[in-house]
Image (tube, rainbow, N blue to C red; front, top):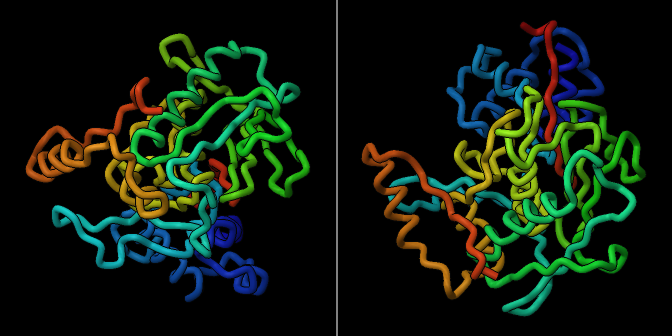
Length: 305
């Protein structure tokens, strides 16, 4: 139970003071309140109990940005009878650039993984960045100079100097910081994949999906409670989740406005169809023409099962 309390404190459901004074195995009132908040945020049935669905959500690999956000988009914001749940960091930070604008990004020459081809890594990130640039008037350009790029990407191990140490396979997967910090770190201990057909590891993590999620944080988005959204906190191994959903789009457009070339109508029609028994949400696909700290975490809470 004390490990669960640390988990809820880390992700914003239990105050540090409450954690410090109640790290016991007692299911007390503050812990039950944290469970209710977690269930609400994760779109789970709100029971106030550590039921199977709640434990499963806790144990799933997830982003380590606190789920306590500064602004939620779901407070009464409705479209097609569906409440939106996008959110921002405190202060609603964004990149203070004109519109349209360009952000540069670069890969660390010293912090890489040797089992992925550099061109494959670049291609995965290009696709991830293009998904966001397709919907907002912000483009992303890769540059060679790592030190002066707006967004700086690298693979690191353990304690790497930013106060957010990595902890090995299927622990913390990656983290990125809110505007205008620009740091984007991935855990080099993970088994990153750019194509699950060529990757046999059961613990493999889709690089493009994580990149797309973390870019959302780089742009200023916090976590959504829409399970289908890219900005939802959880991502399980061998799962691809890189296509933006309407919740992601509405959230980032509230910060930066809409790309003039982007048409929301097709996405609205897709979601409307899914709400009436259709095949499900269709994501925003990247097009070649479309020019905080965050981390994914899995906890083996065997004592709680």
